[in-house]
Structure formats: C-alpha cells, structure tokens
Image 1 (tube, rainbow, N blue to C red):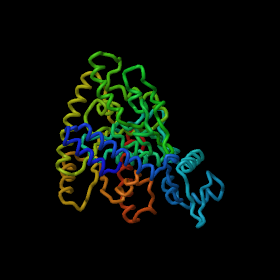
Image 2 (cartoon, rainbow, N blue to C red):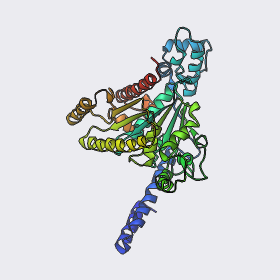
Image 3 (cartoon, rainbow, N blue to C red):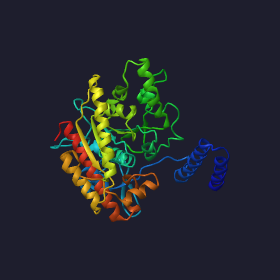
Image 4 (cartoon, rainbow, N blue to C red):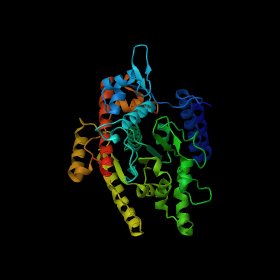
Amino acid sequence: MSAAAVNNQIGRALRQTEAVDEAIGAHAHLLSSQLQAMTEALFPPVSEKTLRRFTSGEAAKLLRISDSTLRKMTLAGEGPAPETTTSGRRLYTLSQINEIRRYLAAGVRGRDAREFVPHRSADEHLQVIAVANFKGGSGKTTTSAHLAQYLALHGFRVLAIDLDPQASLSALLGVMPEVDVKANDTLYAAIRYDSQKRPLSEVIRSTYFDGLDLVPGNLELMEFEHATPMALRNQASQEVFYTRIAAALDEVEDRYDIVVIDCPPHMGFLTLSGLCAATAMVVTIHPQMLDVSSMSQFLLMANDLLSVVGEAGGKLRYDFIRYLVTRYEPQDGPQTKVVALLRNLFDDYVLTNAMVKSAAMSDAGLTKQTLYEIGRENLTRSTYDRAIESLDAVNGEIADLVIKAWGRR
C-alpha cells in the first residue's frame, strides 16, 4: 500500500474512532517497511557490510612508518601482500594492516613494541568509556562509532556496546536492530535477572572492522528499565542493578583493551549501570544554550544518582571526565561564545579539539556509514580532509587520555 493510501486510511480512522494507537502503529509499520526497503537497496540481504581497502599512504600513516618503508617491506616479501591495481596503487585491508603491526612489533629494535601493537598489559585495567548526555541530537552515537573505529584502526582491541534501545550505533556498524537482532541477543541478555540470562560472550558479534566487536541493541533493552524496579522490590538478585554491566564485562575483559558504551539519551537504570561500569566518561555537548541547560540538568541528576550509588557501597573510579563540543561551527558567533563559556567554566575538562560540523559527515550518514569508511575519493577532498582532521584530533586526544591513564608516556 502506498504512503498516501496509508495516510488516508489513518485519517479516516482518526475521524471515526479517534484510534490514536492505530494511527501510530500504522505510521510505525510504514516507516519501518520503507527503511527496510532502503536498507535492502543499499545492502542486499545476501551481502554484508564491508570495509574499504586503504591506500599505501593511509596504511603507512596508521602504522606510523613512512610509505617508502612500507613499499620496501612489500618488495622484500615482509608482511602480507597488498592488492595492486592496474595503475599500480597498493591497497591494504585493515586485517593486513594489523598483521603488519604484529610483524613490526615482533622485530622492533630500539622502540617500544606497543607503538605498533598498543594492547594493554596485565597490569593495565580495561578502559571503559561511556559516551553520555540525556539530550538527543548531541552527537553521542556519531561520537561513539567514530571513536570505536578510530581505536580499532590504530591497533586497539575494541568492544562497542549499544546501550540505546534506538540502536543507532548497531545500524552504523552494520547490524539492523529490527532484522538482525533476535530476542535475548542484546546486552540485556547478560544483565537480566531471570533464568534466561546469558554470558556476555554469547551476544558479542564480530564486525567488518578488524579488531572491533559489537554488542548490538534494540527495543529489548527497555526491559531492563521495567525489570529493575521489580527486582529491587523483590530482592530477586544478589547483584544490585548498577553492578550488572560491570560484572558482565568482567567475563570478557581479557579480550579487549577499550570498551566504548553508547548510552541512551535519558538517565534511567541502563545509563546509570553503564556509568557505574565506566572508567571514563565523555559528555557530548552541542554549543547552544538550550543544550547547555540540558547538560546542566544531566550533570545535576547524574551527581545525585551516583552519590546514592556511592552511599550504597558502589565504587566509582574514573580516570577522566571530559566534555566534547560536537557539531561545532567556528564561524557561528553565538556558538563561539558558548564554547568560550564552557572553557571558562570547566577549563581542561573540555577537550581541546571539537567535533566540527561537516557536510562530509552528513553525506556519509545518508548511507549509514562513518567518515572512516567512506573514503576520500567519494567526497569533495577539501571537505573530507577538514572533517577527518577534526575527527582524528578529537579521537586522538581521547586515545592519549587512555594511554596516560595506563601510565604510559
């Protein structure tokens, strides 16, 4: 049935019976079917999302060696052989880049092997970064996806957790929540209170990004918000709700260096449990006064709730808390004033670099891709370069905070 026909049918139903639930339901099915059709057109059901290959220049930059060094390695048969195009360009998969990392780390002399393979050692704790704010549109999911991919591109073992029932992070990472995620396949499976609880390892999925795994989300996560009050009343669980995500992560911590949690845009049991599992928090903020006011309420509520957790015996140990300015337009006078206010108030707690608003980011999002996936050749190069420079600066700054928290130089 066409959209016009559905809307006409809804209009008649509303006039006749005032059936609001029917109208909402019809619109939900209409939109869902249209999104599914668009997804199938972009990514046919028989195919899976794949990551592009990287040029030798990009590979060398990720490996922190010169392009000439990488070329010499190829000629000498050291490391995997790249694909060579008819024009002579060498193209590497991310898996090959990581293989070269391991090769370089094994034969390194006079340099720390962790420069190439930055995995944490046994005495360096799992870093869990919660990306949070309870105002929608602040850029949490975009930040989470790009941060997780940046870390994977630079050799870290990364787990991304989609804690948002809307599951936008899952969709960006190639998992359709309505189709690909079945019952008890989200984080809820590992933190639920009943006999259907599963080990977290059973719901973790590999992604098309080598080194990046995903715990997908969907509307099932809302069950935790409903089940937790009942568990608190019935004392049905020996584990209080705010320790459940941390306990689930304990089961798999030896497999990862960094966990990135995309928190929901509200302060519920899910968000609070995520914040209690975290060792660091990045609060995204769009530089508008309404968003700043919303962030103020978020911080006040978070303070109250986390104080209650502390009084109940919960232990919160954060290595860092930072505010990230997102969708920033440096030429916008009011935005510049808001950023100046934030830096004046919070000083070094505001990340030095901001996520600059870019048409390149929007263009990539149209096809459910990130800027790291889409490639320089698919956009206006100057636009792409400005956007990727901003992204790398932000994510590099966060990565440096992780390295510092581990006590490395």
